[in-house]
Amino acid sequence: MRYVKVAWDHDFADDPVIYLSELGDDGYETRKVQFYRDGRSEWADEIHETATVGLSEIPFPSLEEISSQPEFSAELITVDEFENAWSRSHAGS
Image 1 (cartoon, rainbow, N blue to C red):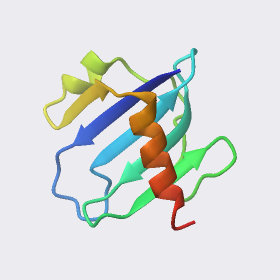
Image 2 (image 1 turned 30 degrees about the vertical axis):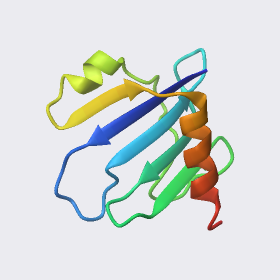
Image 3 (image 1 turned 45 degrees about the vertical axis):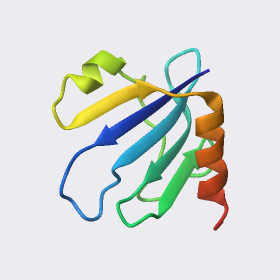
Image 4 (image 1 turned 180 degrees about the horizontal axis):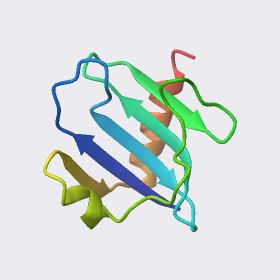
């Protein structure tokens, strides 16, 4: 597994600003957490998706490809950072 954080710099009030993804060996997302400017978060896994958060249907692009777009910044994170965010996103569920 790999764990990735993508920050999206934008002015859209209703869109996430941080995405955390757990990626399988095949490059596909297995779990995702999205954080919004107002502090709320949403999550998805292979069983749970909503109208606003779901797993990608294509393999995750490289960090370099994502970060080459000026509004995005991508980096690897630790499993602990992902798990802490995953737990926080489920606290209100």
